Length: 117
Image 1 (spheres, rainbow, N blue to C red):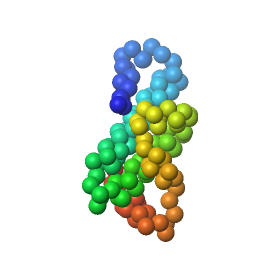
Image 2: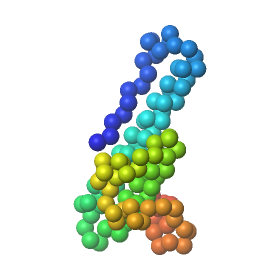
Image 3: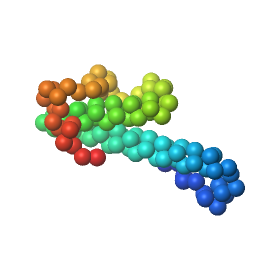
């Protein structure tokens, strides 16, 4: 579902003004980071969909965390149409209801803190 935008062709970009060139590079990095976040969220949603009952609570916590991270990343990039993302990625209500910042005393906080990307 997600795609990575191609990096700038330096040979053609050298004719541009230096400020535009730097801004183009920033845009390419932002696009790449958003694509990476989307793929991580997609993987977590797929794991949740395929999780057996015993592993489901951990898969649900991971999906909630990845969706929250992706939403925050999109907001920081100025992309605020979250309802469209919910429809596009088919994010289940059980994920949406549990998204958000976590308190250190929540049972699955340690799992969130210790998980790797």
